[in-house]
Image 1 (tube, one colour):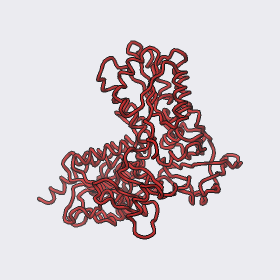
Image 2 (spheres, rainbow, N blue to C red):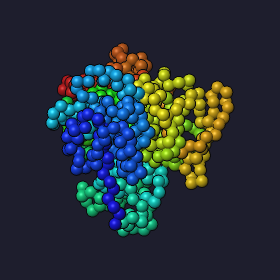
Image 3 (cartoon, rainbow, N blue to C red):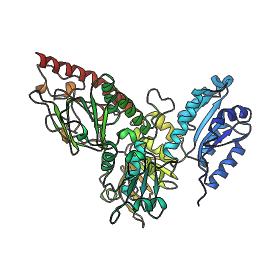
Image 4 (tube, rainbow, N blue to C red):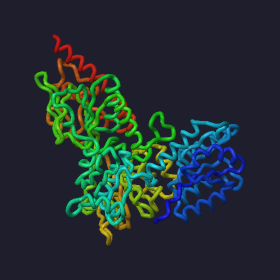
Length: 568
């Protein structure tokens, strides 16, 4: 019988405050291996031992002053040694004013994850909230789940298996991966009739009854198995608000709509969280000073909306909008059933543009990835990885990938990142020794290695057209927004790029009584647009959330007009 995996390490480092730190971290002893060191040198030795033994390191918490070296030098060395570990600096209260100012620029540059005042008494729950935030972040992106509500059975890291794992990661579903010859794999195979088609997905939790084994052909099929079909809605029911898309804009519309008493349904084609849900860490979202992953933000918003009564149907793309006519409601058509609604908020977001290099399109899922999939990032350990894109999503992806990959190279066609990326991310990238930026560069070719995975890229300087072939173990493409909303039909007007027109951008001939639609209203009364799908939007998470919330007030006004027309 295999020995149990070692508990993740929490390492406490301090010369003068170690007793306080040990007392505070005593509550984590049951589930973590909490050890202490009185110097940076001793801490480095313990981390080297843990790495050699294969013990995961979840957190290094260090006092802001160490007896044998500057704390920033120590943090840099520890990040190189255990790059996936989270790093917390603790400052005694009497030194807080001085040292927090001195450390702040290095926090912004990503030298460590956060700092906090050293607790002065027991039950400092604000301190422990910071600690559990870091451990939660580590557990969501690095750790192997202790439980397996879902088991993924696959002989190798084939594209569909990685796609399933990414969906489970983004939905927060606890899972583990097993090979077909493992005991867990054999248990699942015993439930399969005929030749298995991998990956198999074994639903082991009691909530699924007799533990069915699925062989999904797409992630949408698996999501639908988890969350149900739109036809579960009574076909005679007309809801007040139907939201298309479960990204930040759609989630905000669902929370505000449901909380204000509107019967609300959200139809999401893939995974709640949208494109933002693939972000490993959003650091500039209001109210989260230590940052929050897109996955956790999406999950929390979904739970919040459900508590107010909103219903979610995931895995069902809308294929057609039939606008309201002659007093009938709007109809959203999906392959799983129709949703009838008095008002619709279109918040379906955008997808990343395709690279357009045919040999690399053939390797999607085999080292080539659109978006910043956290699952694929874990597969990049000790590889040389490339990220294409100059926006915040690309920067966040590069920082996250640097925790695993040997090197990360950001490729951009521009001279630098200053016009497209937030400064805090540029600073963090500049100070990360594993990340380099290669400007004025595009990819013109690429191909597999002997295993069929991505093996090389052909890079081209856009100024001189000089080319270079480089080895590559992974490619992550985050290259701008492409709307996909042909399902809206011709009645909802869009601009030349396919983004939905709202407010004064709607052509004058579609105005009613000479007045333009409201700011988030489309050319169809009762249909609104919010977030990245809307022409002129800011393409930021906070802006999308604000638009989704704002759209609900317009929905109320529309419903009031419908009631007035009915009683007139």
